[in-house]
Amino acid sequence: MSTMFWVCAVAGGGFILLQSLLGLMGSDDDSHHDHAAHGDGLHLLSLRAIAAGLCFLGLTGLAALEWGFPALLALPVATVAGVGAAAGVAFVMRGMRRMESDGVVRVEGAVGHPATVYLSIPGGRGAPGKVHLFLQGRTVEMNAVSRDPLPTGAPVVVVDVLDPDTLEVAPQPQLGAVADAY
Image (cartoon, rainbow, N blue to C red; front, side, top):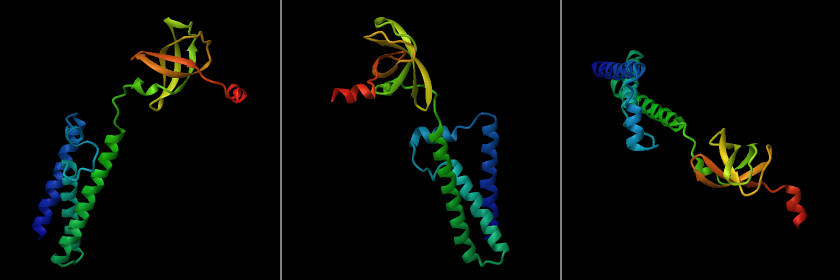
């Protein structure tokens, strides 16, 4: 039983070490392959999760035998530790994949968002001004047109996306003006 635990610990640990070295050299394709092929689920069968599970199974089994556990008890204890390690690595990798971003601002989602005129908008679609808006967790500057002229600092709302670089905006209704209308 001790030999099996040693083989698991060395194989899993060796693979983790190999993957770490390859990652340092820029050849880390396991996370990209898993993400592209399987989406955002919890991947217990990824190479990292299996390697971590084998390593922990082996080390826990060796520790259990060293502490005097009988072999029939050491194996289930080691198995639980290995499955737990695999699940932990899969959970952490899923969290890391969710944090990945290509950095591209998707302006399609800007409609309805408030913005502020940064560079005055002359009115009409001929000459754009610029607006600042908070989109996808950051402030972005976009070209903007409006039917009416709008001065710098005017609060506006995005009403349409004309192209990837230009938004159509309208003056944002003032709360007092809305209350007076009723």
